Amino acid sequence: MKYFSLNNRDHRSTFENAVIKGLAPDKGLYFPEEIARLPVSFFEELHSLSKSEIAHTVIKDYIGDEIPEQELLGIIEHTLDFDFPVIPVEKNIQVLELFHGPTKAFKDVGARFMAGCLGYFIKKGNLGKITVLVATSGDTGGAVANGFLGVEGIDVVILYPKGKVSEIQEKQLTTLGQNIVALEVDGAFDDCQDMVKRAFLDAEIQDKRQLTSANSINVARWLPQMFYYFIAVQQLQLNNKKVVFSVPSGNFGNICAGMLAAKMGLSIHHFVASSNANNVVDRYLASEKFEPKPSVQTISNAMDVGNPSNFIRVQELFQQTFTGLKEKLSSYSFTDLETENTMRKVFKEANYVLDPHGAVGYLGLQKFLATNLDYMGVFLETAHPVKFLETVEKAIGEKLEIPASIQAVMDKEKKAILIKDYKELKSFLLS
Image (cartoon, rainbow, N blue to C red; front, side):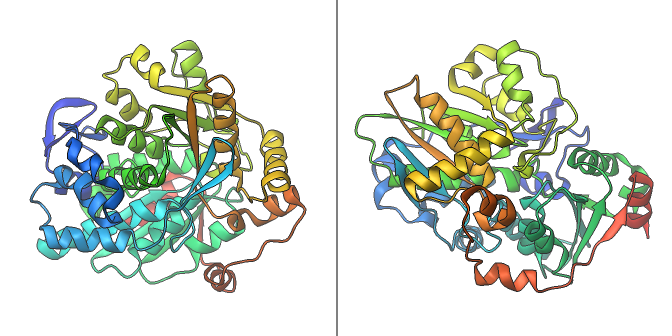
């Protein structure tokens, strides 16, 4: 498998180079040259396969022989060593829980898989030390910090917006130490992301450090998110209904991975991009104009993205045709008040605790199903509710039990370096 740049289709890359570099030389996102449909026999046997068997079949063509089969299986088994249950919430609505990993967020899958791949490539070659530079609006930072903790040959530098992530999210990315450094940025997530992109363009930094990104722009972070869509469909009783997945959407890597799974033959008939006030894609589907705006702070902070990087990949899956995309994607946005009311309502009526992002996913699914009665819906609960403790407890009027793994982090001391602008980031990276 080769990968091309979405800025320059003549540029080709191996999987290894795409993982190590993160972005193409022209700073375009990498995209696979071919998306092959999986054989019918695989889907006929899906119900009887293990998580690792499913994942290996799904990912192997995107890696080819660049990672030996036994090494790849080991990476997959470590990545998926927790559960991905699908649970009924109400008639026609089910939830896929993605928070049973070490940092209680869906990003554990991509971060662990990428750490395994990058760790293998470092052991295999003479790459020297690599710096993983990543911006986070919430859960990416904790998942990347945990996934790369102690991996030999890798330093991790995480930028996060001051005062705009939850206390637990902040603790998860600022308390680990070792090869993990957290930079607290006096600004919004978009400022963090812009600084990271600028660093990748800075020849002076590139001469000093070998940078790669662990955001979902990196193919090794993006592609493995397909795994849990297959694992979810394996658990569904379809009863002749079509399937729609509602995905809380910020940078659009998660929903893009689901759409890629559907292109490979997985039985998902439609997607809903559920967003908060940062509704650039909602507006695009209504107007056909993609107009990024500065992000707005909300209680579903991991989706506070004003210019979603992965949306260009979504468009590429549909050959850049607006009509083809609109047939398979709906998008709705919701206010914080609607989100809070939904957390309260679902807890009262179904005794199920939603986090703010899952609540937005539920709302989007409910809106779609209201006019599409022949569908069964699944929404993604992307993070454990306890990660947004104050918001959730206020909404449902109950105290949440804090898991032991989270409590252990809360008792640790925060260590972060405050920076104001790109000049200070550059100074840090060159020091």
